[in-house]
Length: 218
Image (cartoon, rainbow, N blue to C red; front, side, top):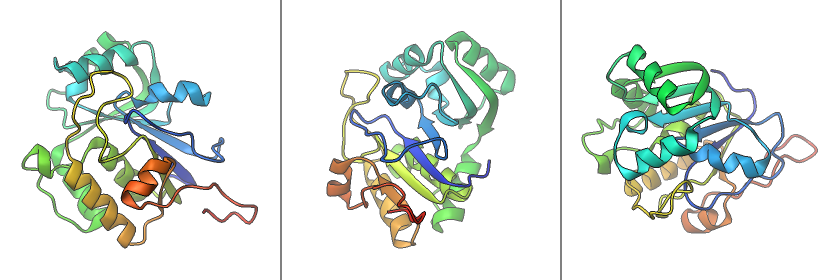
């Protein structure tokens, strides 16, 4: 899925902000159930959704809440990460949730590893939760790999707790690896910004100011 302009990656941190200048030329990638925040932006559905395998059938609190929030909603292209049970079972799971998509793709562990390596030059075998990147960072890598001219993250804060779609305030995993990966991508010169002032202050990402009249992204 090639991109030809700026891409917003919307994560599920409790606080997110609509990027300055957001219009129809931007593409939106949501993560798990983060598309809940799009309602306040006046947008019905994201262009792409990345979802963990556990969100489809998992029984923990977060997975149950994801399914509740996604019931009756849809996306453009859905990418389910690390799904191991075949397409038929995935389609049945999505139908049970009531979540629609134009197309569904299964992304295995080796494809995740290859994506990180191609974009960042870093080899990460994902041996445990602490050494894996979150799905939000995988979405950033996906956008960069597919040609995004700028990636604006919103609702992605490696240091926050909780999720926008539940009030349980669950601790977030992948904190160290997410922060390290973002820092590496910036050091490599990738055009990564944040729409969230507190994230800009906390981890040093430039705050997205929109596109000026000369077409320059700032």
